[in-house]
Image (cartoon, rainbow over all chains, first blue to last red):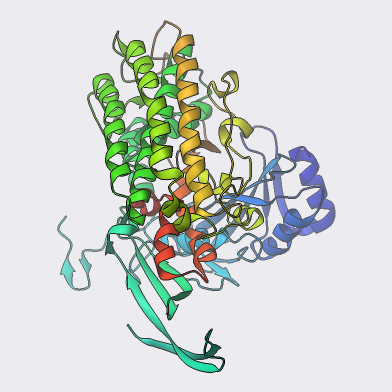
Length: 159
Length: 387
C-alpha cells in the first residue's frame, strides 16, 4: 500500500484518534495519532492483512521543547514491503503513552530507553525501569532542559 | 546468590518429585564471555536457566546527547566510530548515507565504491572477531589466533588508507577524508586471493569440528516469527532462515549493481535458527564480502572523492530514518533537523541493543554453559548496546 492508502485506512477506522497525517513535503510520510489509542492502532496495523506491519524498526523518544515530548515509531512490513511512521505527542506534565510491548516485543527495551532518557511513561509496560542509566539516577538526560547534576550520590562530578 | 522461590519438579531417574530451589547467579559485568561489560542475572534451577535478565549501561556515554551539543553535523562522525568499535567504518557509512539523504546531495561514484569496499572490509573484520571469539568462548583457542592474523591484513589496508587502525573518521559527509593510495587496488586483490583459502581453513578447523557442532547445534533456537517480533536483524535474523538484508531489500549506495548472495540458516546441523546457523551465516557472509570486494575493485572509477558542499552544513528542517546493514545487523539513524547547523536529535537504532533484547527468549530453558554459546552467537559489542 502507498502511505496515502494506509492513512486513509487508519482514518476510516479510527477517526478522531488520527490527529494529523502528512505525505508531501516530508521525507518519511507520517501519521500523528493520539497517545492513548496507540495500542489499538498498532494492533490493527500489525494484524490487518492489508498492512501487516510485522517489524518495529525503531522507537525514538523526542523532546520537541516547550513542554512537549513525543514518541516516533518506524514501522515496516517484511511481507508487503511498505513503511509508515507513527508519531505521538505527550505533555511533559503528564507524559503518558500506551505501551506497544504486547504488539512488538522489541518495544520492551526501546520503551525502557525512552522512559530512562526522556521520562515518558508507557502505560501497560510489564517492566518499566531504567535501562542505560543507574537506577538511582535523577532526571532524564535527553530532555532539552536537563541540567548536568553537580553531585551524584554525594560525590562531586568533576567538570 | 539469593533464594528466589521453590518449585516441585520431577528429576529424571528418581521417579518422584524433588524439591528444588531457584537461585540467582550473577554473570558479569567482568566476565570474559560477555564480550565487554554486560551483567546477566541468571535465574537458575540446578543447571537449567529459568530466566535471563540483562543489565546494561556500563559503557553508556549518551552518544545522542553528545550529538545534540555538536556545533556541526560533521563532528558526529568520530563519535559514531566509537559505537561499534570493531566495525567503525560501517557506523560512519550509515551516518553519512543518512546525512546525504537529508541534504539531498549525490556523492561522486568513486566515493560510493570506496565506501562499499571499506564497509565490506569492516564486515570481514567484524565477522572474524565474532567467529574467532565465539570459538574461544566454547573452548577452541586456535581459530581465534588465525582470525586475528587475517584481520591484521585488513587493518593494514585501513592504516595505509587513513592512518588509523580502529577508529577511522574516514567517511565524511559528501565524500571521504582523502583518496586511497595508488596501490590500493593491488592490495585489495591480493587480500582476496589470500583470504579465500583461509575461509576453507576456518571451516576445516572450527565450523565442521564435531565438538564445536555438539556445543552449538540445537542450542538457543530462535524461530523466525519470534525473531521478527523482536526486530532482530543481521546474521541473527538470517540464522533463523529469514532472507532479509538491508543491502538487498532496502538498497542504498551501489549495492544494487553488485552481485552477491544472502546466506541464511538452513538447520544443516540441527534446527533452523540455532547457534551453529547464526555462526555459519557469518562465515558465508565473509565469502560474499570477498565477492563484493572483487567486483567493486574491478569497477572502481577514477574521479573526485569529495562532493561540493557549503562550508556550513544546514539541512532543511525535517526528519528521516535511514538504515544500513552493518556486520551486526540493521543500524538505523533517526535524524531530526531544525534547520540549524547542529542536529536537533540523533537517535541510533543499534542492532546489538535490539538483538540482545531477544537473548532471554533464546536462553530460557537452556543450560548455564549454553548461555555463553548463545550470547556469543548474537555477537554483541557493548559500545553499541550502551551507546
